Image (cartoon, rainbow, N blue to C red; front, top):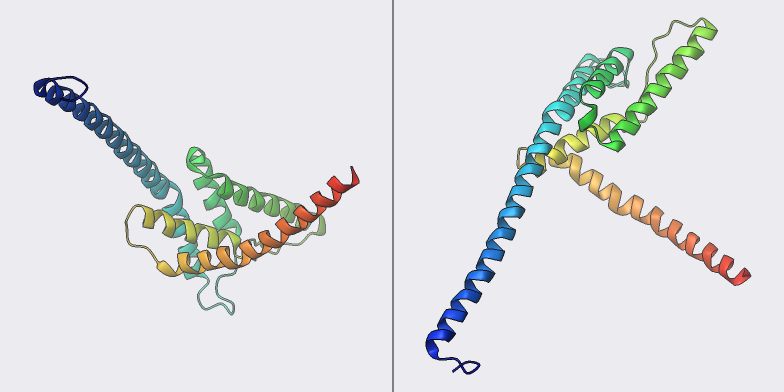
Length: 190
């Protein structure tokens, strides 16, 4: 006898407790599955409307630059307008880091255009000399495909992850130590 209850009541209470726990676990798993499906649906929409068009635009630019001495020469005005159109059509799907890079390009192109008009220069404007935009797009294109369990190019993720782990963590480590030392000096002054 459990808690002074007969065997029949013990079985009924045990069954109720098991049913209650099972319903909670089932409910939580159903919610987690629904969230994952919604997230995957959103990622698929971002991939289709943002990263695939950007990836195609950069691939087409690379194909256009084949045979030139240095290969990919950066973003020209034609590619910039294509990127800007993708941005304006899908602004609700653009992540903040990509938006920041697009605004950097806009600033660069407007500044260069203004400078060239003042000088009377007709040389076409180019951007993305450091390949920041193309690396960002290729990395996130492949990262999105990996998360959606689609085929992806592993080298983009491998080298980016190595860079993040070694270079950025080292820089952040030393920055953190400097900030900690400065904070300790500041506290000692008080």
